[in-house]
Image (tube, rainbow, N blue to C red; front, side, top):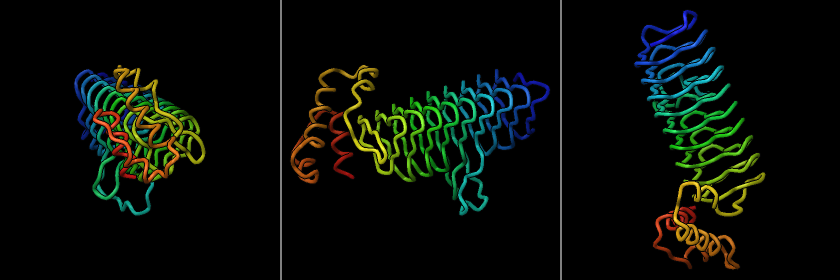
Length: 246
């Protein structure tokens, strides 16, 4: 470990090999930081919190703060973080409530002033732009991208590969591979760019778009259109099953 002399590190914290901790950073009790991580100047990491390898915590970020929930009751909740995540300036990640965890996957980018509330589950390879607010108990699946200033209400699920446009106010579940935009956010199109960046085959993208059109652009009521289309493609099938479940 390489720690600046002004850093405050609780002796009960577990710090892995090759970790760098900058000036005036604070690492609390019950924190486990994996190898190759970097905690920048003035960042705060509170426990209980477990962090994997090669994460970067930028200046004034606060990870592991207590939940903003009057019913939390001071229980020993936690944050679990995977590998290779970047938490930019002023990002806040709060612990879970009622013996639960707030969970972050791997390979995510949280930009300036993003907030992840208690009991949120974020998958892997997620991009959360500036000032995005995720309320308690939100679930974000893999490969989701948020535009700046978007907000997500409690208990909503953002499906795999979705794109939440800048400023969108989301109060209901977002289907996989779809773009949502507006206040209140509505489904607009499939996230073709996101699928292409994942090197999803063109024929799969076409099938996802076919299912999307059959469900969202049909003249039939939604309750009928979701049962009038079938597919065997795994991506398109996931979209269809998510819509049928809402």
